[in-house]
Amino acid sequence: MKFLAFVCADDDLLLPAPENTIEEWLASTPQRVEGHRLRGREDATTVLDHGALITDGPFADTKEWIAGYDILDCSSLDEAIEIAARHPLARYGAIELRPFRD
Image (cartoon, rainbow, N blue to C red; front, top):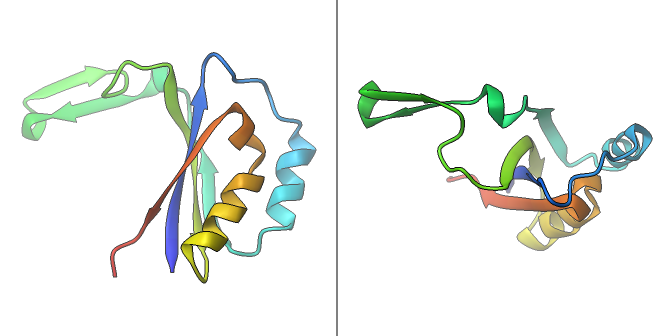
């Protein structure tokens, strides 16, 4: 079962995680199929109403923003939760899990 894990950062809690911590998580997580860090929300563009409205910045103006994503291939939601809980950035924001449609 595949899950998209949104790595959500919180401006009030965001502290840089040591790079080796991320590398250790990656090395210990064979269920991670793919993932990538995203540029900051200041580089976001939002397209609304079939392109009639295009704005700079994210859709919602909140202190939480999507900092990256991971695709996890797990045997169950419980396994995905365990992996997300170990993600180094989980302590500075949230990891939102969404299952792919079959």
